[in-house]
Length: 447
Image (cartoon, rainbow, N blue to C red):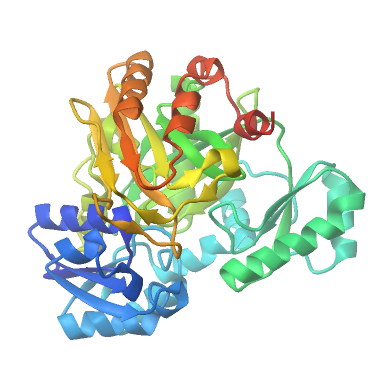
């Protein structure tokens, strides 16, 4: 096992990883930007190192500064969390060169799965259903028009190096194709430094279902059931739940086996998530694989009892998975609401500022993952998420009831939040029925 883990991230995920390390008896190192000097993760780690200015390129995306922080502090492993460098093959490879263990998959897996065309080819090889579309990067507008005409409109234009809902455009007709490709390429270049794009058939009104997998370095791969992430606004997840209301034992078995096959064909190890679209006839299609821990991992932890972050660390240390697929049982129901500093009435405008008062709900089956505290100032430089509110109960109906009062008890003063908006979602009859699809929230917000 490692002696000291550096967390190359910030916010609630950095705090989450620090806590997991402490339970494993590991020393921790936090890195922080000059804007995050008073951040919780920088205060609670055993050691903290300033790695640059507020801009992410100067700090949390600064590979050299992070590796230098490892060398200065003697950290022999890095946990990248999610976002930032978590799916950066170059960073994982540089950690390896410097004798630092990257707590995640191999750089080769990250590279392959980050290339949407290569990932799609691998899925076909593994027998995993894929969405019809281009086999690789679109090289010209003529090629784009030809492929879109072949698979039929509407189509999705997607950034090859994309993630987090960036670089995605819906195209309803040939007249809009070139403009949307140009917009997607520009956004992809801005966020990922790579403007390559590909085209896929747009599946109308699907569910967005993702499967959590764990794979060790000894060839053992299991899945831990599904999460329903269909409640999205502009391709950004807002609320997640597990299990999904559409799932049957037969469908879960088929999708779970496909997720395991997807990981195996890539030689994958550590935690990962295979994302699928499921249509109204329960046909499912591979979308992408996220080679990191997910924001919504706590709901899987609630329904399976498996600590995914501790599992990540143990796998990176060479340990075998202590459980088989037969050991994984989904029990009860869990829901996560992302609490953001934003104003839903002003087109979800971010609301940085000082938290003057904070009261978080508690009680059985309530979990708060957060780095916020009373007096903390939310800066304008990073993601606006204040906390993740997660509930667990024996049934979905009880989980919804618990989330209603938990949101009602959640008080944040000094900044605008989306708490009331989340409460409106939980009370929405369509959500309560479970019959919502990936486009439902966009339609609701536009009304």
